[in-house]
Every structure is written in C-alpha cells, then in structure tokens.
Length: 161
Picture 1 (tube, rainbow, N blue to C red):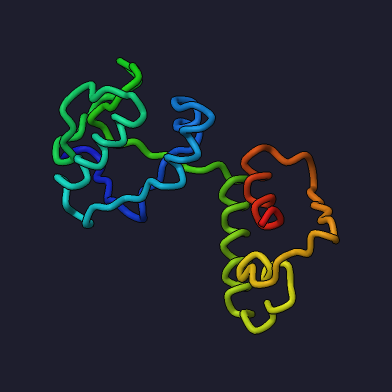
Picture 2 (picture 1 turned 90 degrees about the vertical axis):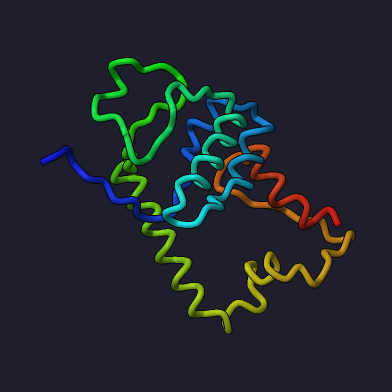
C-alpha cells in the first residue's frame, strides 16, 4: 500500500505571513485582499494556472514541475529553497489561532441572526453609511491601542466624506 492519502478540503487561502515576507508593505495587503481561488473543484489545470500566477506575483520560481497527481513523497525540507515544490503541505493554525477564529465565526453567526437589532448601532453606521457625520461635530475614534496605517485607512474614510 502507498503512502498517506490527502483529500483536498475547504477553500484554499494565502498564508498571510508568507505574503507579507515576500511583498512590500503596499503590495501585500492588495494581494491578500484580492486573491480568491477561481478554479472549479477538481480542475487541476485551472488550479495550476492560478498557482503559477500567484507564484509570479510573489516572485517565486517553480522549482520542479507542479503536478497534483504526482506529489513528492520525500521531504521538501531536505532541499529547502524558496519556491514551489511539488509536494503537499499541511498548515494547521495553532490552538490559540484556532480558538480566536472559531470565536469570530461564532460571533458573526450570532450577529447574523440579530439583523433587526442592528439599526441605530455602530455596526449600522458602518454598513449603511447613510447619514454623513456633521463637520461641526468632530469624531473621536477610540481604539484599544495605537492603530496601524491599515486600520486607520478603514476608519478614516467614513468620517472624511
């Protein structure tokens, strides 16, 4: 009998740390925001086209021909070089990351059942942006800590219109 069998499950996503390490501070958020898997499930040709486009955007070489039907059995750690190896890799979030993600999903699901309670809340102001903020009333943005540039870009446009 052969080695372990891995079944594809879930929607693929980019590894944020890898993208931010390889791209500039301006390019990384753009790629992370716009990249979506656009191939049909099971269509390896479409998937490989998307992966090769992604490698180009990241400036990474294809170190060996990529072929999902013939993945390498040996460890890529033996010849670890930056680029795409024809091997399956499993990335699992730490228990802390998994707990935070699960908590966020639970919160979003709970909010989605309470849509009739959103009007008049801060979430309503973000979602609908119907009423402009009067210029006479300055807005005080309160955050749990200092906001980085990306966070400021999310908040400021709501009040600069």
